Amino acid sequence: MLALFETPAGFALFKVLNEKKLDNVEDLWKEFETPEVARKMVTLKAFDKFESTTDALSSATHLVDSKLPKGLRKFLKAECAGETLVVADFKLGKAISDKLEINCVNNAAVAELMRGLRSQLSELIVGLAGSDIVPMSLGLSHSLSRYKLKFSPDKVDTMIVQAIGLLDDLDKELNTYAMRVREWYGWHFPELAKIIQDNVQFAKTVKLMGIRINAADLDFSAILAEEVESEMKEVAVISMGTEVSDHDMLNIKSLCDQVIQLSEYRAQLFEYLRSRMNAIAPNLTVVVGELVGARLIAHAGSLMNLAKYPASTVQILGAEKALFRALKTKHETPKYGIIYHASLIGQAPPKFKGKIARVLAAKSALSTRVDALGDDADASIGIESRAKVEARLRQLEGRALGKISGAAKGKAKIESYDKDRKKDTPGVLSAAKAYNPAADSTIGAAIQPDSGKQMKDKKKKQDEAQVVEEVTVVQTSTKKKSKKNKVSKEEPDATTTPVAVEIVQVKTEGKTKKKKVVKEAAEDIQVTEAVVATTTSELKSSKKKRKAEVAVEVAVEEVVQEKKKKKKKKVSED
Image 1 (cartoon, rainbow, N blue to C red):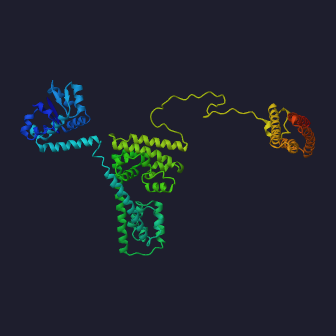
Image 2 (cartoon, one colour):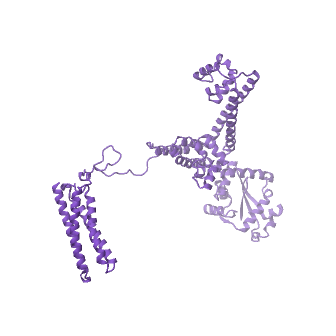
């Protein structure tokens, strides 16, 4: 029986001399108390040394994943032919038995055996001292950890965090110093602050000019534009400022030197930050820029922490106070934080800034993960992501979409043929409708006879529906009342229904003459009085109730027919 043991220097193969002692697992540790006793239990048969650190790292990574390294495969083929092999890892033993057809053993006794071999390793392997094993183990563990975490020593984001913090501090100091120079020198030359807006140009001009009287004799072409220089020289002659001593001007020039030096160091620091961002996070730099990307990394603490954030967190990173205030007061949450200063959001219209911020945050999160965990140093993902964000911006603004990358997927959409569609129009035009001159008039009496059967049928249906509604009102009211009050209650209803019908008809007919309306109303009232007289006489006897209802319906139909005849006469007269 052979035992396979992995060391930082190589693979060791031990021969188990007394296999029966493996059955007593509890007392197996006694066989490795001293080197002499351990040599009676096992002995070194063969040792396969690693050729380099890269070879050791490759073998270690294979063993961590329970895979069989190429060097170990050759070693076992040469030394373990027809032997039983003791392996600490069950999955590795299965791989060896499958590929090399070697019988592998893995149980509780194997674990105790490996523990004993580890305790006496320096004594069992000749030439491998304990002082050599410790540094080799430490170096291999560091290399293995660096490989597993995909960590690169060049990607140190701590420098970015410190650089962006110093850059912000320099901006604050520069603003403070520049405002102090303007205020201090303003006592002597107050008009200069309005002529020169840039702080660095102002400091260089003050340092070169000194007292304003010297402005006419000096050349400022290296600092200022020609128009600004001529204006400054003209104003310097008629300035209202007070006089200053040489000692005061010396202190003002010293402050100007500080402003110039800080501005130069700020430009140098920005170049350093740009180079570090292009090396550590090239994709994030392409998407949001150097300053915004560096501030996102500094706010998250590191590039790895930023890669762990979802896109929704990246979008509002830096606006935590506004977010929690909005949640507490139940107002709208902020749409952007540090990412608002990106150039793509600045290009978007105000109503689209929220949408572009959401899209940009998603692409920034993807680019950050590629930078933190990827092996490639190019910015292809960032370039593609920025192109997609720009395409989305053009789409929201209504501009023509450009082809970003790749071929179009899917089949072409086949549009159905339409005869009303023009050749170059993007949309399908609806068919033109015929003009209806009858729709111009809203007066019922003024409808021409050639307007069609549809208008006549529609009028007939409206008249019949109105009459039926009035009759049903009369019938329901008569049923609810008592028998004694039926006749007295129905008389006003019967008299009022035709009048109501006629009022509706008068409204629908439109603007007719008042005299004709009064005559028609009087004739209708006479007809209705006759109908009421017949119905009241018949309703006195309960046996003839049904006959009375039939008579009412007949009378109503007669009234409708008479009205239709009158309307036809009016149309023919018109």
